[in-house]
Image (tube, rainbow, N blue to C red; front, top):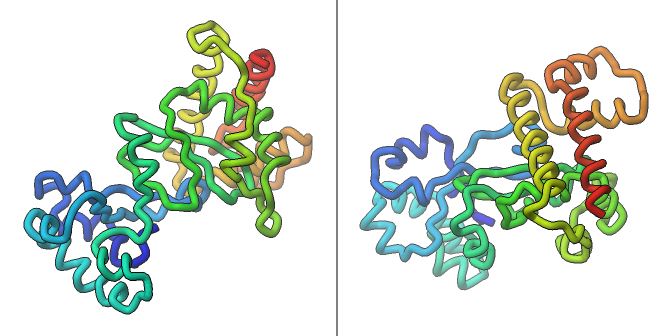
Amino acid sequence: IPHGAGFLVTPAEAQNLGLGTVAGLEKYIRPYRNGRDLTGTPRGVMAIDLFGLQADEVRCRFPAVYQWLLERVKPERDANRDRQFREKWWLHGRSRGEIRPALSGLPRYIVTGQVAKHRVFQWLDASILPDDKLILVASGDALHLGVLSSSVHVGWALAAGGLLEDRPVYSKSTCFEAFPFPDLDPAGALAERIRSLAEQIDAHRKAQLAAHPDATLTATYNVLEKLRSGEALTAKEKVVHEHGLVGVLKSLHDELDAAVLQAY
């Protein structure tokens, strides 16, 4: 939780602060994603995240970043009642130090939005900094992505989770920690099939969304639900169906569901 608008910058602002020219700064200015970035239209913002650095280190190594935060974040933090917020003004309000060791060394990790219309799990590259409203699973194994993406887990999550208005809420304690993963040989043929299908689903979605900037994950899964129910598509939904190749996505999900059910 950054707790200060000054921590979020555009790619152009990041470049002006030295990203790409100042050695080591790429570790501290990173792409930033929230739930809407993943399911809707990405904002393309980046976040300054100086976790692990003291203020004098920032001033010495990254003086432009220090001045940026000094002018845009510190005045707001000085008025905060929380002593830590005031004294650690160059750091995020909540830096989530407990999750960082779990992600260390992973090339990617699994995310889903805490509150979302459709329970979709996907890969995020390790370079991306997640917003606090994303649920992270510290695994780079597509076997985990496959089981979580199956109708078995989605059904469990919808039953075990709560609601925010009409949108399902994913609780890590009831939806994830209590979920019984299948007792499956991770080196077996079935595990490899689940991995393959999970990779195909994630790659397919990313490729189609990249090819059509107006497409979104939410719209894609709205159409997928209609295909599953046999409802007729509107003209707008037919465009989404074409751009997202939703029929291909449905076939991949159907095969994944069958494989995960076989694993149980």
